[in-house]
Image (cartoon, rainbow, N blue to C red; front, side, top):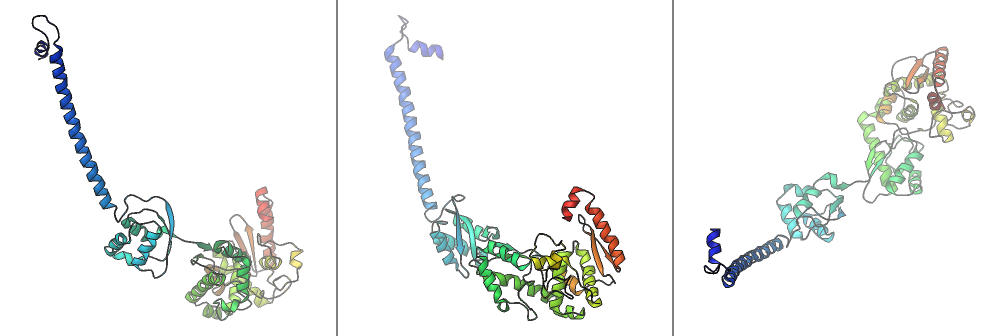
Length: 380
């Protein structure tokens, strides 16, 4: 084939290349290439025009993709589907309300969209926007945690930090404590009645609303336990049982020891002995980091100083959790008058019916405290 092609391009007599013939062949090849390029270009032109038309059709009422920029969107309580779609359009989340309405109409779960603040994205497909609204993980929640064993002043700081409201607003609200939803048997203020738990704050909180979240939870727990009746059965009042629980929450290391400590408190009260609880003295002097007190602090003249004054302090000293409340109304059986932690690492505590036995336990703690530098720090 190559020889034939060569012969056709050469003069048979002279053997020279025939330029005209070569040019004809080149021109023919170029014409074919040009025709192919025109054909391919036309095909691409038609394809691109068709693709653009298709994309314009697809995005006329809706976006495609996974969204662009994060955006916060608030869905008010009681908002209808059409109101939600309008909110999404205004926030740039979806392109057209009717695209979202159409997706919502095809999804029975769309009626269960919760009110709240959501973290979404701009330029979302309506179907994806609906799916994100139906996923509780996308709700932006503001939580507040109140810890067991904290006194009211500590809880005020926690509520202020979580809500952004000033401590003064909470303290002002707490002054009017009879309007905070406390049980009818409450006395002497709200101390002890803010139940330790984690709460979701409302969209626009105020101090009273935030406090009532915790007092309402206290009431719920107390009702579940039938706390008032249980206290009466235990031979005390609900308010006194709450005070006992608040002391235990500060004094007890291990949950299993709470019923025993409750019995120690009741036995000492029955015997007419001063409670001599460091936790109440710490409350009196405003100490929050430790329940250990000094000899000078134990001489402070305060109704909360149970070294100087007999009986229970006049009010709770902390907010007890449910386990402490339960122990206060269901104390263990025993004749103990003393309890003493002997290992601050494990929380091991010994219970004694005699002062002599108590002194042995105190000596064990002192030995533990001097056993190492680390132990000394825990005993400081």
